[in-house]
Every structure is written in C-alpha cells, then in structure tokens.
Amino acid sequence: MADKVVIRAEDVGKHFGKLHALRGINLEVNRGEIFGLIGPDGAGKTTLFRLITTLLTPDSGSLTVLGLDVVTQYRELRRQIGYMPGRFSLYHDLTVEENLNFYATVFGTTVKENYTLIADIYSHIEPFRRRPAGKLSGGMKQKLALSCALIHRPALLVLDEPTTGVDAVSRVEFWELLRGLREHGITTVVSTPYMDEAMRCDRVALIQSGQLLSIDTPTAIMEGFTGKLYSVRAEENYSLIMALRANPHVHTAHPFGSSVHVTFNTEGYHATLPQYLHEKGIENVTIEPISPGIEDRFLELMEREP
Amino acid sequence: MREVVIRVENLVKRFGNFVANDHLNFEVYEGEIFGFLGANGAGKTTALRILSGLSSPTSGNVMVAGFDAKRQGEKIKRNIGYMCQRFSLYNDLTVRENITLYGGIYGMSSGLIKQRIDELLRQLEFEEYADRLIGGLPLGLKQKLAFSVAIFHEPKIVFLDEPTGGVDPIARRQFWEEIYAAAARGITVFVTTHYMDEAEYCDRVCIMDQGRIVAIGTPTALKQKYGASSIEDLFVGIARPNAQKE
Image (cartoon, rainbow over all chains, first blue to last red):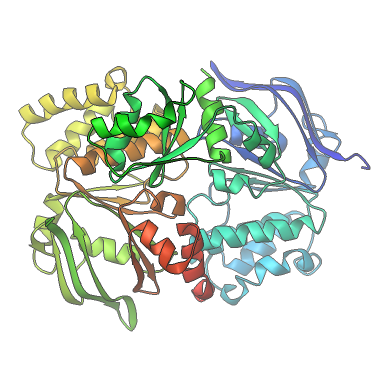
C-alpha cells in the first residue's frame, strides 16, 4: 500500500434505467488529503460515494480504492472504509454509548482499542453517553455518526453531506475535527452543496448532472474565472437585479447577499452603468471591481454547461 | 412610516423551569425580509411556533398580522403562510393537486383557485410540470413551488423555517429572487436559516442565543458594530462560547 493514490476512477459510468447518474468520471484522490465533492442535489455525489464504498457497482470504467477493485475485492475493501451516509445512520433508540459499541463490534474491534482516534470528537458527546441517539441535537448526532464511522480506524473516510442542516457553529467545529483526522493519516472524501466549505478542502471536484466540471485546489478553481467581475450595490436589491437583467450589456447578474455580482458583455460598460440605473430610478449605486470567489466560478461553470 | 406587522413585547415562554424565550422584544415591518438566526436550541423554533399561532406565550404581548397570539391563534394561522424544508408538499400529489389542496385549506373558492393556478404556473414557467407528481421534481423546483404555495392565498406574512438546505447555488438564487419579488409586493418574509451567507440577503437579522436576542439590525450595521467581515464570523463569535452547553 505504498501507492499515494487512494481512489482512482477511470471513465466510470453508472445509470439507473434511462438516467445517467454518472458519466465519464476520471479522478484521483491522494493519501491524506481532504477531497471535496461539490455539487447540487441530484448531481451524482451520493451515487459516486456508493460506488466508492462498494454499495453499488459501476456499469462501465474501472474504480480502485486503496488499491482494491470495488467489484471483485469489495469484502476486503469494506473493512478499511468508514462511511457516513447523508441520512442519519444511527440507531435512535440505542444510547450514544450503545451505538458506538455496536459499530465497533460489527468491525470486530473495541471502543478502547481505537479510542485515541476519536477522543477529540467523542469528548464533545461523552457527557451524554446514556442518552438515546434520537434525542441528540443535529450537531451532536453528526459527531456521534463520525465517531461510529471512525471506530474501526479506516484508511478512508467517506462523508456524504455531513453538515447539511447543521448550525454554523457545529459546522465550523466539524471542519476542525476533519483537519485533526488528517494528522492521523486518514484520507477524507466529503460532499457538500455549500461553496464556503469547498474552501476548507485540499482539493475539490465540482460535479453537475453526473459529470465533473473541474478538479483542482480551491484557489486554482477560483482563479479559473474568465470574466471581469464587479460588485454592484443599491438601496433596493430586487429592482437592481431586474434592471441589470434587462440591460443587454450585462452578461450575468447574481445576487450575493446585499450586493449583486455582475459581468458585462461590453468592455468598459461598468462606467456607464450608474447612468443607466439612474434612468431606471435606482439611486445610491456603488460599483467596484472584485476578485471572484469559488461560488462565482461554480456559477460560471454551471451556466456554461447545457 | 411602514406598517408594523409583527410586534413582540417582553415575550416569555417557559417549559417547566426551562426558559425557552426570555423577554424578547422586536418589530417586523410590512414587506421586510427578516432573518431569524440562532444555533440549535437557541429558542428560534419556540418563538416561530408562537408567531405562527401554534403555541401561546407564557407572558408578554405578541401581535401578528393584527391578531393577539395569546387569544387569536386560529386567526393568525389563517392570515399567514408557512413553509419548512422538511415538509411542505405532498410527494404523491401532482403540482396542480398540491396547489388546489392548499388553496382549499386556506378557504379560497374553487373558481379563484383555478384562475390563480394558471397564472402561477405561467409565472413560474411551470406549465409542463402541472400534472407531474411532486416526488419526481428536482429539489430546487420543489422549493420554488413550496414557496409559491405558501403565499398562494396572499398572506400578509410568510414564515420560512430553514427553507433552503441542500440546493445548488443557482437554485438558491432563484429562490431568493422569488422572496425578493414577494417582499416587493408587500408580503413580509420571516425566515430562519442555518446558513449565514443567506442571512446577508435579509433586510434585517436578529440573532438568538440561549433564549435571548443578542443582536438585531441590518447585516451591514451589525458587521460594522462587531467588526466582523461576514454574518458567519459574527454569529460564530457570539454563539460559540456557549455551543457546548446543550
């Protein structure tokens, strides 16, 4: 297992009846990295994770994980993967402690043996170890599910949207915990629909409609933005957006909180824009050039694809 | 002067010894997009249930759409719209059936429902989906439709309880544009969300922690006041010292 590549996908495809869930997936995930899979609901993230965790088999292409083939060597592989599915994967009527013991037993190990690996995470929920898992808050359920996925010391951790529906504070803590796991040499593959979380990964793949749009470091993906981007603000956001969309010189106009991110079809038009908006009755306009974020790049890539 | 559509004065809600809402005071105006933020367990859901007529305050005065939450919960329910992420539409009914059902529940006549459905489907560019089951639609479309259904009876206020989990950046923006359009028509939008980047879309936000309001204002003013670069920074700064106590 000296190989640095933990997951290697070559031209992987999967369909369900007429639906092409995944098409021509090529990617490599390296040992010890936090690799993010970023894409909307229905893009194929969960399907790809089920292939990696051997719960589904690919229709075409080749997929090896930890040097093992997902179709022929799945038994060996399963012992080395920790998987946290999108839906809550714990037994609601077992306590925190019972859930953890259960997962340890299934994998033929004990909580004691691997406690050091989960100590940082489990310490957050240990005070509630006699509480049924169903009675935990979202953030605590998530930490328990992560502890359960790690209790057999897997080489690869697969997390399907672990932070969906979890509050901002718990999300920040969760990402800190993932970074801690990297120190133990564990490779993590994680999916999320949230762009801000992409920035916390070592590398990310953007996925849409079953195809990968881009794989790179978050910084390199941002730098791939091709246009010139401006941030436009006015007192009233909605009328501003409508006026921008109605202008033929405006290429794209996306709301970003209290401002609108705009690209133009016509070079230099930004200088004329305040005048146009004034004629539309929109006042107190500010316009400034900004550097694109990863979300800007993702929107650009998504709109280019049919 | 804009009309006040929600007025909360010294709202207290207790469950036994536990104080879920501890003397809340705020007002929400007509056509405003008001973001209601807080970590799990901060007391958001309790307040939301009172404001939407599902629960009664222990003490304090709460007026919603002109009705008293203590005595007129049923009237409040008829005059608001409500949408949550977990459940809003029936998956095994078609788009048209879902809209008809909600219109009927809110007491709209069948003639009015028929007329408004066609308008709505056209406006959303949803005509091709009219007779499709909800279950088969992409999440982004479902959310847009769920919002339209929640305001189909033209309520004064619509409550959105964590409405946008899991959708892509384009669908989320389309959803916010629907919200802007509703607010521009004068509907007050009261929204709770876990996603602080979404809070930046609100006219004003209110942050709750341990049953109390700890900050309220426009996103820009709050960021200035606390020297935070984003609402996320501000929120984590306020809520984190207490995050482990649950």
